Length: 276
Image 1 (spheres, rainbow, N blue to C red):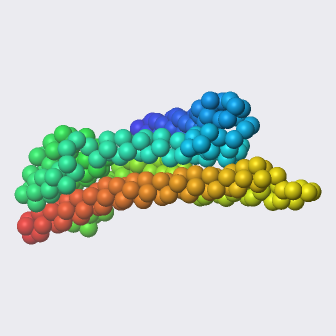
Image 2 (spheres, rainbow, N blue to C red):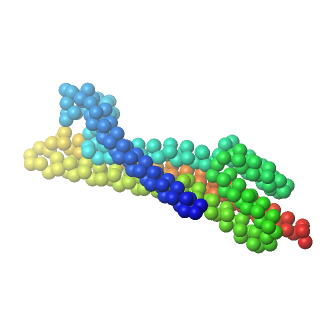
Image 3 (tube, helix red, strand yellow):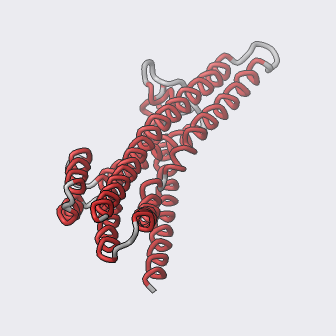
């Protein structure tokens, strides 16, 4: 019955997270369009107050506006990177718990090595993070197998299994939306490339006109190509940085759990060895 409740809670959490992610994606694209249409496309940014005309000298908002219809998409992708980066930052900060994680790990390892399991559990309760939850589960199981007199090998398997089960429940929360960030790495570049291609099509279209080439159309086409390229590369670069940063944070958390699990198991082995 308890397992069914856990599964239902996990499914409910996943559904809620998927809805949130979907709403964020739609909202970012919409906000990107609003910024492009009403901020960058403000008539005051153009000569003669005409968005179809030339940008005022030095007006970068108008220059970006001239990047064309792909700009709102690129703006939306950039906003997604920013929003999901903040979301991941706060989630991983909460997962790390209160205080410094390294200091917490040293305290717990010291407690376990000294045989003070209850003290280690108290430190986990104070930390209140994903790492602390997994370690606490292992420590509680440690006390149980100690009381029941398991052999070293049986206890090792039981403690590891308990920690792995709790970790498997915590990991989806830590890794959620990381797939979106990794996808944005490619999407930013591809969207920028699409804008580049459409811009160059316009530029060559201007060259192909009969008679004297339309210099304004040629300039707009090249400008669209370069602006979209720059925006797409910037979006991808930011996505790569934040993705690698958060991946490193997640690896640190999982390494801390594994390190604590090994300490708990080795301590139990020493305890059983002292009884022989």
